[in-house]
Length: 102
Image 1 (spheres, rainbow, N blue to C red):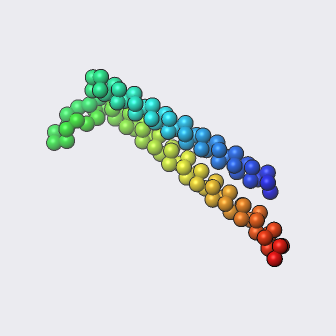
Image 2: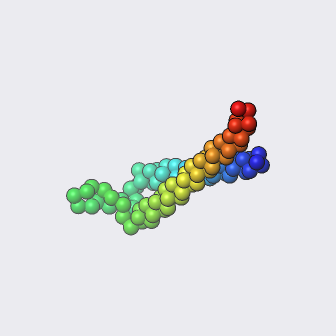
Image 3: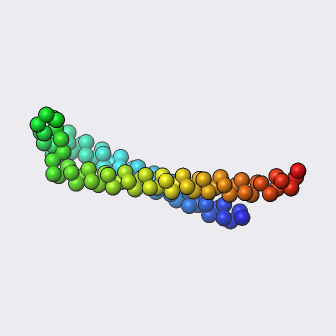
């Protein structure tokens, strides 16, 4: 029983580490994108009535960022599921001993 709970904790830690790595990658991409945009505004084009928007080159970056965001949501969902499983398993471990003491 304890081994199973430790496995859940290990999986939770690995998913959390993956989320943090993904967040760092997203942050670094955003910083690089802002730095390059401020240097010479590559990928930005004027869209009538909407000001500056992303050109074709910037569209690839948008797709990459969308993929990162989707992966981030998936990892958060996995971590939440592991936390729910952990809570349920802890209740299961506590419940029989709690009932036996009454």
